[in-house]
Image (cartoon, rainbow, N blue to C red; front, side, top):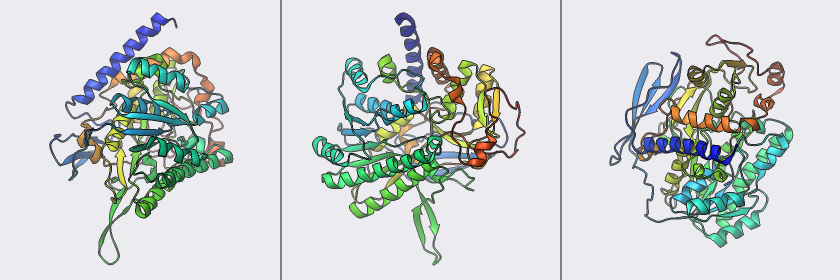
Length: 498
């Protein structure tokens, strides 16, 4: 593309992002439940007044609805009215980069830390980001030019360079550390024995190093960790999933709150469960202040900051290992490739737009638990939806075909998912919704249309399998339409990329 054409496209996408920002700041009516079948399960949230001490979520299962009220104080953006020094570990990644820019734009002093391992995995897999992401130094220079604020980049491996991490903390004296520095793809964590071992060593070792470094630094650092909804598992739980802690009655009749039981579905998800146990221990033993964010599947590409200059553009993964399901669908529809739905598509998952991810993280940073309080846990999600319903919505908009593939994962083909997100909703108001923000679909499709020449179509198909049985079942998968329609309720291997 010539510079003039690129300028027009970037301006168009900026207008779409601005529209989304306006929607977030002034939520209107309650959005419709995302459903194209009677068996679909999702929740929708109705924002409480900002001055209220109560937050309300309406949860639906089929045609039945119930209202849950939680007596939680509202979150505030600048709780103490002061900008903070924040170190973002993993700040070069899909969520880390836009979060770093967002925090900087809000007046915080941000240091970006990354060992660029995700870029090295691109080389390993022979598949780059669909968008041409720039070197960190170029990104930071561009942000200083267009954003008017400076950020510093430190190349550091959190899992291996403990002494340098401690030194960094003592030098920078951060108020908060945001922890993205983990291998984030469930499929990649199941690819080979090498990737399984790397995921455990990197994720669990890195988290332990972070917590030990906070103690050794003798600083009161608030740790904000990006976790996953996958710690709860993706079976039908039989009720609403609370935010981290489950109320139970002990055999002697006394009530108690316990950490919600873990039910990981991959090596990656298992590391997040182990992270949660480490947080509980260090919080109990050393009073480290921790906020753990159990996030849904992230969709979208740009934020109001990344859209300012092409050099700031966020990465966009479309491959079978790292591409998140909705972004993959939008990319495939823009390229005329049939949507790759796994199994029946009956897997219900939680979703959140990348811009709301940034806003949620800042809210968590500015509302830390007090010293001695237990680990704070938020469910960082906007809504839930079935995968086949997402495919149907995009098919209705674009006319693309849907390709039902044998599934690489080993999990339930159909599940319900009802989730509480009361803590965030009172601050954020209504978050970006799938059906109400079709313009944001257009923004993602514009990105994919602009850079589709960089796509390697063969990389779209799943290339990581949970076990030998799923690998054998997927041997016949192809980008050509295999099965135009899967009867609802048919049981095939279940799952969805996370």
